[in-house]
Amino acid sequence: MEHLEFIITAFFLTIGGFGLGFVLGWMANNVFSVWAENASYAKSITHPEMLDEDGHVLRDELIYLTFDDEDDMMDYEDD
Image 1 (cartoon, rainbow, N blue to C red):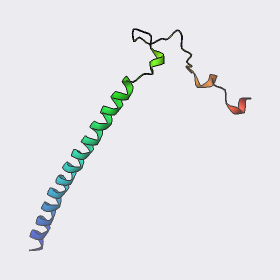
Image 2 (image 1 turned 135 degrees about the vertical axis):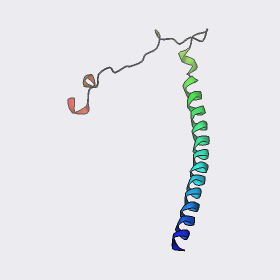
Image 3 (image 1 turned 180 degrees about the vertical axis):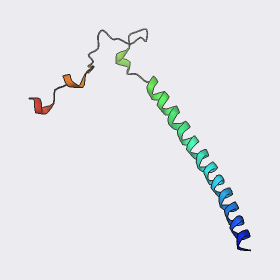
Image 4 (image 1 turned 30 degrees about the horizontal axis):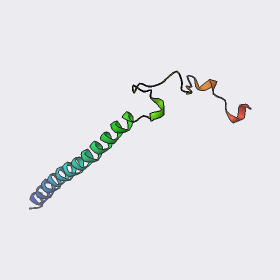
């Protein structure tokens, strides 16, 4: 009789675990979908002052910095 109780308990725990995993996965998928939608929208946003009249990015009139090598950057200790 103890063996049957163990099998029934294990069965319901297994089914409950799969059900809980399904529900949590479903909810996580919805959260990730909303996040991915917002992330792709944020990538497409640019500041209007960075565009010319035709909507192309002005690279020649902008001041921007690029750091290719971290060794070239100056730290406060280097002063």
